Image (cartoon, rainbow, N blue to C red; front, side):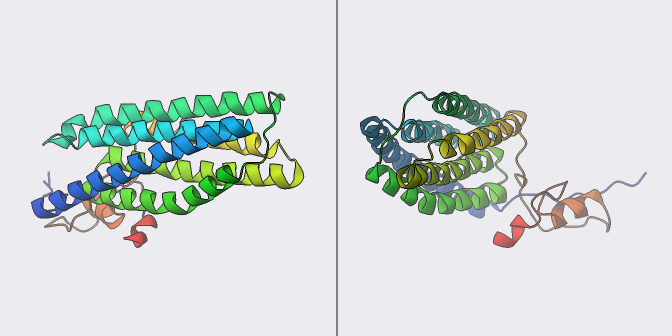
Length: 246
């Protein structure tokens, strides 16, 4: 029987400290932006009777809860012990978002209210569409390098907020320009389906590339360790293309 000497995956202690500090800063930025976003979106949505804008604001509240879970996790000296609990909180936030968006979209399709034009809403959705992808990418890179599934899951929550920003922007624009009130709820239902999928993955602890990559010390060629390392730490290669980002 051949015993393989698998590599010790993970960044060096100094690099780990840098990544943890970076994650705390990203989480703080995410929470700050989303608190402002929630206040503006809910206020503008109430004034314009826009269910889409109000839903967008509530999504920001969900994003704050998700980021707060990661902040709580990394407030501990040994953040890995809180990984599972943080993932569960993030998963629940995905499910809550999916439930609200589904109910809100169904109500809109059934004619429960018609939104009016909202300039603040259009500006806010456009700003979020530009800002959120950068936050999500930075979170994802740091989470993958550190090997934190909760940070990767939270980056997906931020990315979902980006998609929702696009949906809200398109819905508000189409409604203002052509009166197509059905466009936003249809797209929102797609977002809800994605949120359920991401929530299930977070609940199970699945997060693509949440295994820290490292240079092998002495694994034999063709071993499982080789495959995992060459695919960026993913046994199924689900993020091999994403490794090109870093």
